[in-house]
Image (tube, rainbow, N blue to C red; front, side, top):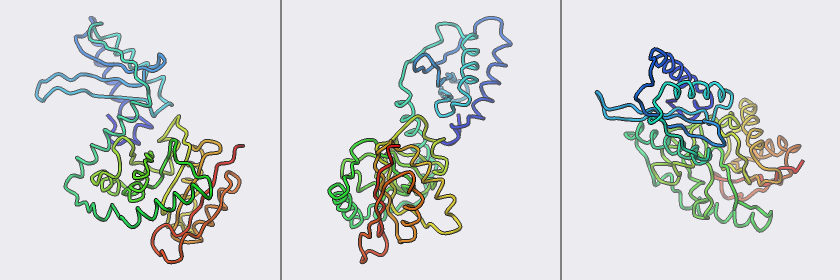
Length: 301
């Protein structure tokens, strides 16, 4: 029902639709011949599918969910049960599916929708897959595994992933992060070039990370070529990084790369109370990508 993934964090459109549906059904004194599917986890309904029969168009299902909008969970349930009370028993199907599995399916849906919406936009896959950078990042990660006990074997969050140029290197190391960025065209480039995976990709405002990704914690949080960070946008970057730390497990790994020294120093100073970390100047000869590195761990307390 909601037009974008992030809109599911506050389901205004869905709630209005549910209200109108309940109002319409209340006109009937007898159970209605219709089909609905309710998705449950631990006895709580978090999604509703409404069947639309073929009349002037092919049949389809309308899907509504509160899986990302905990604020309206109770209201959503009230609407769902009100609708159920007006449907004949044989038209009601309840499925028990884990929310995590459903959320992954939603991510895949919106990724596919983005590809279809922007299918006429040009994509330069050769630019997205930058082999020299991929190989360099693989070397950097392998070195950090040895020198700083970097561990990306668990659940990994990649913020500000862009078109997935760095994600390609992770993929070749068998690391499958959940990727997020607010630039839909960059995400499209990554999806079309198959370096970003539809079920592992989100278009959303990273400064609202804890609203977009709820009930999840990550063993590691990473971001490559964060920036540009300057005196004007530092408040936004502060929010992005604080939100990222909140989603990282205690003792979890942190890895961020930058183009300039002032950027990495800003981040190290910002995270000083929340994490222990080192700054590394990776290469004075590389002037474009990943020149400076912040490597650390979230503090256990």
